[in-house]
Structure formats: structure tokens, C-alpha cells
Length: 134
Length: 295
Image (cartoon, rainbow over all chains, first blue to last red; front, top):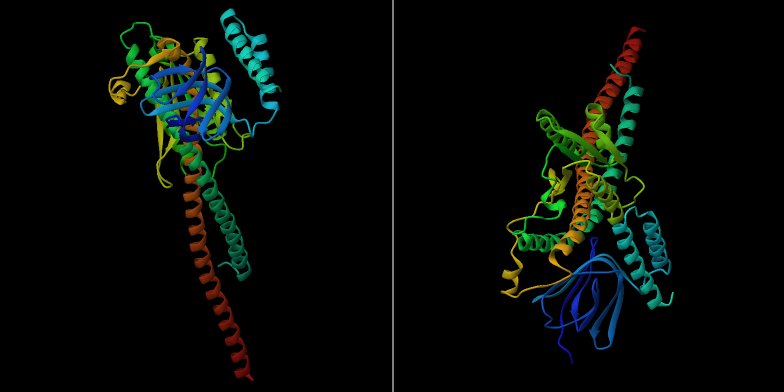
């Protein structure tokens, strides 16, 4: 059995998860990361994506997270997400709505740089949608 | 002297008022509990954000060029005041004390020859500031339609502020709100949000980790740049939540006072009512008796 470490998922409105876990998959801005116990300290920003948590013993959870960052240190992993929704309770419309908003952002963007960031957001959201087969 | 009927009417009207203030107090108490939980739930996020930001800032402090949200525009001519108040009155000195702080601040800035712009969040502050600073108020953001304040509302305010900053419409932004200490004590607070103020006494990450070094993904400066707007939203959210709790606390104690006042008034009026009733009976008796004696 794998070692466990402390994991906290915090959104601006409340603390969502605070538990011992075996493995967490984090959608980092520069690629997916799998965090196990004893990971090197890291600070990374997030892209919109899916967060997979394995509590061990077959217990798992999946969250849709958006914006924010992840911090790993000796104490464990802390994830600060602007939005974090449990997939179990998420309504189907949420991602579709987010994509619609992102599309509008792309259309509204005035300069190239802004359009690029908005475009990247949109891509990420589409990937999430594809992964979920919605 | 008031007639018996007048007194009866007074008493029943004060009783009706007392019922209303009592009900408002209980509603405020229930809402306060909810607001307090919300404010407490938001705290871990804000604290974490602060530590991380402080550490990033320290790590980057050697460099000349920081993000503008942190180092500022290098100017302090134009000030933006974001004044957060309640949407409703009847909560004691809550709104007035925030407005008073903002007003003092504005007067000081104006005396120094600075330009002042004001964004009002919440209608009550707008109503009070409008009398004196109507030409400085550029916008009123109403949160009336939101049942409970949350991230969407804070984000709305933050986006507006960021938009203005990007357009170079101000140099320094200060947030006014009421910090929730206890139910009976709320402290009006002014907090500078742009340029971001980084707490210096935060324990550094190296200390926390016993010397381990962080990997950054992407680079430190990029993370910092993406975190600062987020931090602004968080600070505003914190202010709004604190405000919500303070408002309910202030309303609760104001209504408690009002209920007690109404109780005193009812006692006084009842005493007067009973006295004049007795006086009237006595007069009537005297009239009957002296009438009988005359026969």
C-alpha cells in the first residue's frame, strides 16, 4: 500500500477536502502532474481541468477545478482553486456554460495576447468536455 | 394631558414596533451565524494566498521590474476608493462609520491636491457620500440582487477595478470595509489593495520547509503575475464577507437596543395609563357620592 499524505482542496468560499490521500492528479498549467507522497516541493498554476483524488482502498473522487494554483511542501499538497465542483453533484450545464463564456471571451478580446489566453482557456475546457463525454 | 384612548393607541403602536424590532433581531441573529461561517470558511484561502504571495514577492524582491499590480505605477496622483457598505439601513452605526472613515480619507487626499475617484459597493454608502462627493463618485455597484455575497460578486468588483487600473485611470486603490471582530464590535478598516501590500512578517517558505527549494511551474514571475489579480478578488471577497457579518452583527445589537427601548416605553406608558384611569374612576365616584349627598 502506498504512503499517504495530507491533501487540502480550498476554494475561496470554503474548504472542500481535507484528508489523507494516496495519489492526486493535478491539471497543472504546463501539464498534468501526479502527486504522490514525498513529492518535491513545487508551486504550479492550474488550468481548467479534472482533479482526480485517490483516497486509497478504492475510494476515489473527481473534481472539476478552474483557476488557482497547487502547492506541494513537506506538509502535503494544498490546492487553491477559484472554482472547484464535485463531479458527482455537478450539473451538466456548468461546463457547457463555461465554454460558452470562454467563446465570448475569445470573440470579445481586443488584442492578440488577450485572445491567446482566452483561446487557451477555451481549449482546456473543450478537453474537459471531451474527457467527460458530455 | 393625553386621553385614555390616546394612551391606549400609543401603547399598542409601540407594542407593534417592538414586535418588528424583535423579529428583525432574530432574523439578524440567524443571518449572522451564516455570514460568520462564510467568513470563517473563506479564511484558509485568503491566508494561504497571502503566504504564497509574500514568499513569491520575497523571492523576486531583488529584481527591478515587478508586475505593476505590486510595484504600482510609480505615481500616487489619482486615488481610487472602493467603499463597501450595506444595501440596507437599520443597522446602527455600521454604514455611517465606514462612510466617515472614507470621508476623512477623501478630505485628506483632496487637501493634498490628489484626484479622488470613488466606487461605491452597496447603496447606503452611495446615499451618504453622494451629498458631499457627488462629482467624485464614478460608479455604484449594487449587490442587492445577490442573496448571499460570494465569489461572483467579488469578481465583478475586482474586474471593474482591474479594468480601470489597466486603462491607467488610477494609481492607488484603497478598500473600505468593516472588519468583524465580535457581535458588538466592528472596526471600519481601510486597506490598500493596489499596489498590493505584502505582509513582511510572513514566515518564509524556506523556514517552513527546513531549507527545501521549490520548483516553480511556470516561472516565478509568471505565477506572480497570474496570482495578483486573483489576490485582488480574494481580498475583495474577504472584505465583502467581513462586511456581511459585521452588518448583521450591527443590526442585531441595534435591534436589541430598540426592542429594549420599546419595552421601557411600554412600561412608562402603561403606568401613565393606569394612573389616569384610576384618577378618572376617582373623579366619577366623587361625582356620584356628592350627588347622593346633595339629595
